[in-house]
Amino acid sequence: MPEDIESVFNLKNGILARTLFLFHRCLRGIGVRLLDNRLINPRRFSNALLRFYAPVFGGRVINVSGWDDRDKEGSYYKEYFKNCSDYLISNVSGKEKGMGSVKKNGSEEMELDLEKPLPPDLKGEFDVVFNHTTLEHIFNIEQAFENLCELSKDVVILVIPVFQQLHILETYGDYWRMTTLGIARMFKKNGFEPLVIQVNDQPFAPIYCFAIAARDPRKYEGKIEKRLDFEMGKFLYGSGIKGQKVEKLL
Image (cartoon, rainbow, N blue to C red; front, side, top):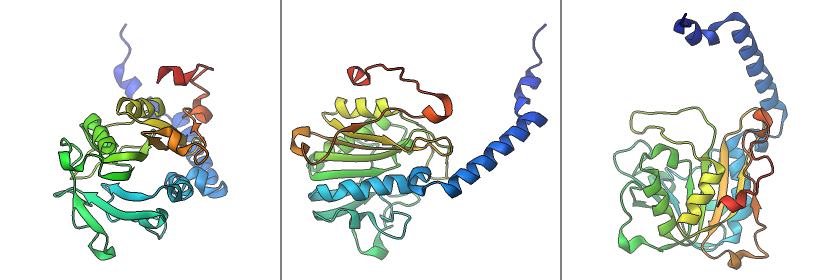
């Protein structure tokens, strides 16, 4: 006899399930309050890493789709790049948090739509391209990733969610969750070598991947220690890598 499909749909509404879900949320709440927020809070995790690495880089920097450049900790990302010669922010018209967002802080802003092919005059125009949690909202993600890489003649710094609840607004959707390995392979596909792949992996709020990739990794020998950590979800589900040589898959 076929299984009652409604009983499957309603499994999450059972008393035991709801009790355990509530217990899990309470435990998560305790963890969030007691553990170092640079581990638990994904934004503070990525900000801490960016503060450490950003001073290594000079030249022209662009924060792509950077809204008003705020880091949500009372500062601006421009202040992280202490050795840059020029700092711009790009946004797109007709979107929430789009063009015009930086008027109040006096930063230079340019228009750039990541879903369209990059204008030829922008290729290689920047030394450092920084993008924080945008790619998941762009349906044509491969074009967007290619554009980020083409903008840079040196380095791309990327923050992107690997695990995260969907967040959808009227002016943009939420389409993708890339894995750490997928991020690394996309960099290599576009001519960049991953130098840093780090995630805030823990059992309470494992969300962000922070990545740095360079066109010529030899330039950063002795300046940036290569740190590639592809594990994500290990504390919830156990390791899914099982000792494989992940770099052979790149």
